[in-house]
Length: 146
Image 1 (cartoon, one colour):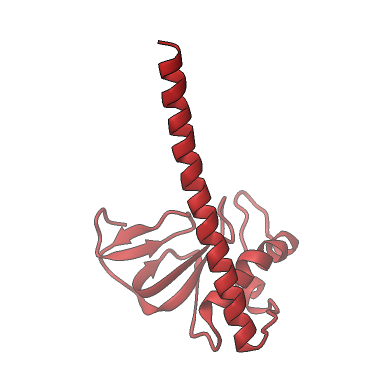
Image 2 (spheres, rainbow, N blue to C red):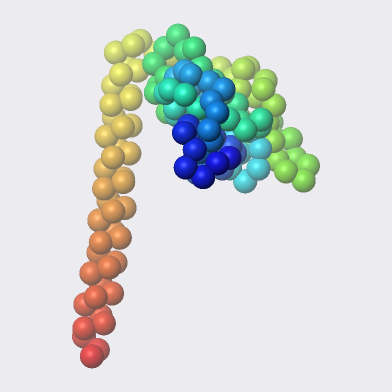
């Protein structure tokens, strides 16, 4: 890890770090393989590097965003069934490679992607609005009791 590195560096954390050397140049899903963020999924397209317990999935035959959204929905259930617990919970490669993924027609995949993307954008906008309302509330309350 390097502060202000040239390339994204993915670990088992939700946060993306930086590094000066890349090991991958592809469109990929990166899945946290252990720790508190077990199963967290990042998407990257381009040059990047990844920590040893981060699974890099690439070379998809279908839309990568469909796979991402599918995994975000169903991977946690599989992890809960198969997680290996020691001092740090972890998954093994077969948790991912043997997972069955339902693949509908491409038009249905695209509708699912569009719908989920719209819902995620709406959720983000609502969270931002909530932050603004909280700031406004604090301001108004502080002025009420001067």
